[in-house]
Length: 497
Image (cartoon, rainbow, N blue to C red; front, top):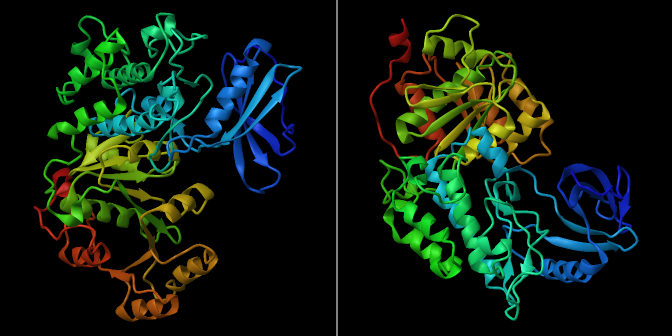
């Protein structure tokens, strides 16, 4: 908690413009608030309140001016700065970043982060460090750690909390103020010298070691190699070891040098096993999200989501099917069948696997953010028939929104009604599936919606099994997105009988 009482509370106005809404977090010397912009309705900012004594007020003012001059997509914009001399409080106004910290993200994985994510993550951090270190004068971040890295819903990493960042001053032998987080800060931050770019690189090494040991270690000690996860590329160990050298001159000397080292080894290239790099349709472009929304209860959203997931798994592998509803029961019942447990005995793990598809039951939006950072080629969201704000937002932001409605003649208009109710939202990338619909019903709906992505789904009793007629429809639905390959049949239900 912040040791000094805050000058702000709900409704307080900073700089005659920013009204405090709520507290986002606090530390030993600062507190961060969400604020609404009185001049730009709907715009939200983060306001950081810090306590600075008179002796360092000038330094804080200089550093604030430096931070305002920065511009990089992995940094929050610092847009304003205010002082309150009587209380010693200073205020930085910056972008409000929606998402979760890397620390919270790690907890979601119980300390385990997919191996495919670690090096791309390091390259993102190095990108912003290279930007900071090549400013004139160089900017040293000085507090790189999991709680100071924000992960956005789009899986972008943003460095936050510039409370102790500073410009490098060549004429100084050491820093005026010793700051940093124990376990992640370089030795020179404890009084051994002035921090420079190599100090941030040490912190990066500590962060990578922390990720590679499941959160157990951030300092290089005897025997630590034995705690580094075995599936990680062995070439990563000497990189981390060099980053963590005690003496700055023994480390990598620049972020660019580390980037070159990581990209030098083919083992670090983000190409998934079994996928040809020559296949243009399969070039890695991040995880793609298919969101399946039922028009009404019983329309077949879950059945369709399962069929789509196993279709994609037969084509591309690496597919997750997510039940985005904390009280849904369908996946729990399926997990009981898969794992052979008694009815009502829920497993402690919310993930289980069926024929290569990873099922995630009763999942929250925060979990979805975590999954987006994994190695999945596709994530299929089973949204059920609920249209609450959270699920509707996930549907609208998906790469492939898929509406499922009844194919019965008297129910086909339900889809048109849904489209009209959401007409304020762009619908050009929506797809519509009508189980058991006639060709005439599809034709009429295409005409009414002025949309050609309307499909009838034939009878399909077992969504886990391949069905040629269903595959033909899905081939059309995902045309140009995945290669046209055929794999062996899956017999999940037969094996369970």
